Image (cartoon, rainbow, N blue to C red; front, side, top):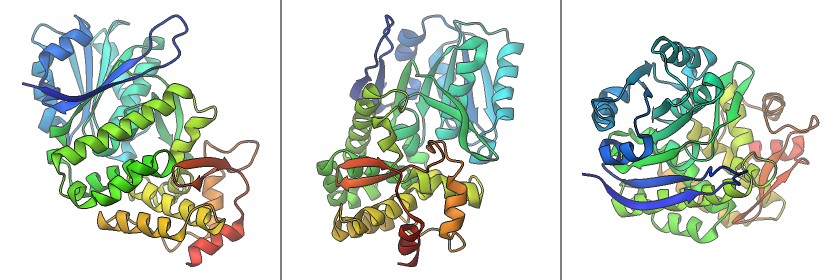
Length: 365
């Protein structure tokens, strides 16, 4: 039996076609046969997972899809270092060998890597087929599964090859978090507090007040945190699907984070760990400019440290190393690196005037 705690929609400009889709948050969602039947009809499925998640949940999803449905399983190695074109090619190879067609639906069962890979593979297969997100990590549930950003990494940069391809649905099973390692859970918390920093001050303060309950994975607090995070991202994406303006604020901390991941090697730091550090760096620059208080920065650092998240960059990364790595970031425009800073708590802005001296100052603190 499944139980839905929250349901919301991502509403997108239609262009004559209804492209809105549901986000369902609840318990037992991965085994909800009726829910899958309603979403899929009799469509064949390409079910993609990795060798960590598949042993835990693949059979449950397979059973829920029903015995009469054609299902092709693709199980990839786990890890950020697997997020490349060859992994996408493995998905395409299996789908082609099993003669999948345009009414086939790809399903991503896993974290952000599997979600991004599966979504990108679906966007390219036969010039585009539908896909469904079944995110099993906290970070994927509150961030990467929502909004239609799909893609793979390139040796010269993170997520440099990809497409905007919205899912048919995002189905979040809170029960999958029971098997999530503490480090992976903490990585997701970093993305949660990001939403409070850039959009909703009340949510930021609520998270600080409920940090102990979140740390112990209290069901009610965790469900509300996921719901509010998804609601904020859905609102931003609805206004700016392809990151032409507003959506860029979701990259708070990410310019520095992607540089850390690139320099350290993908997977050495988890994405959420790099984002935690990147947010602190961006918040410190914002504070130095007088846009947020030092108390706000201190509160953010204390919250992140409670979850064991890094708040200082790798010692070997100087301002020059950061700048060289960030020069290849997707957010570079006309040769200028763009950063997301805070104008105030709950209000973010995109700037191009961060100086080497400012970066040096926060690295020396």
